[in-house]
Length: 315
Length: 121
Image 1 (cartoon, chains in turn blue, cyan):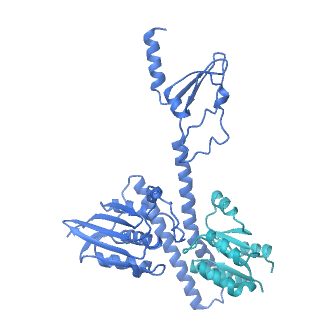
Image 2: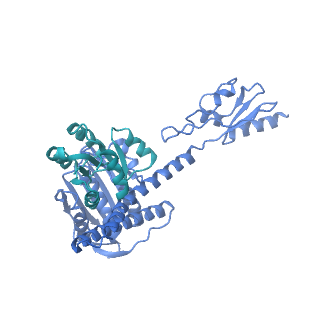
Image 3: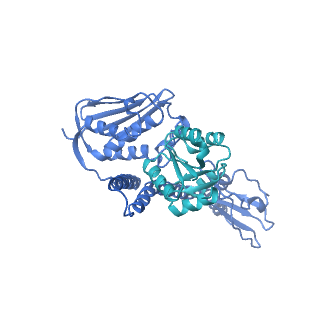
């Protein structure tokens, strides 16, 4: 083989994306390339092939352990064997994430379904008093609306992940009214007197339903995590609205900062309150992006501030 | 008549539980949070034969509430009630000392079978 060809082959050997292990007829390692070392860790010539047998937990990869799996198949011929090693952990992580999201979505839909199924059965009782039947129908309606909201949010998130636009119904709404409606929606579950508003008298062009959901999610996070002073304030500059929700809650631990934006990742509050579906901030980010705005978050043990910047829209 | 304490923070599910338990011939005791559950147990402990405990309560997790209920009534069977029914979540719940796990949504037949097995009629 000419020197030039050998040099070319050596270059290709190192340039390919896959790891390559070359075993001799005695089933020991003769050569390996850089990608193989990167994927499998330190390698030494002469290592027996048994060092590369699949480990029992080779499939048990997690986000923290992205180590590549050892080769699972090799076929020895008289001259030895070439083994190619590829890192499939990204696909596996995506598969695990997909299954986690499906599980969480199923749970979130199952909870309201429990009420709908249960009361629709109770309503078949011909002796049921009228006022009770009305109450139960109210429960069914309330839970069906919640499911509808959840499905809307999931569809919006899916569209946003696929780079498609979220459908918006844009109209002009007074900011104070939108804020008041959001606070009212939380009043059944939380002590909303903790929320103080400082809002200028202005209207913005927005999707009422989605913007209200954004405000509810931000205020609910503050309330759920134990803040007893929450300020919802806004200021307008030129054609931009800067809206801030700041609280005196315990702040977000540094190790959770990335995960809070992921869908279906929720954290129990330090005061013992269990987390919700874990869609709040993911939804906030995608809706604000659809409204051509941006979202920022600053947190410390003294509190958290979320800032939204949005176009005010047509004057 | 045997009594069941249902700890559930979702009002419609609490009312539905009451209807199902009464239709099966059990006395219903309800609590929508941990504090109320402990209060019910202190006040009516002698009439309560089983606790159905929602795992995800708004004010605190059912898992955190479990040892407090067990301290108050050490010999009472406690059953977790949960909508998280994937194998990993169920395996995690099974690590706790509970008499059973009742997945949501549950119907009258599942509830009847569970109660008959753990407390009888």
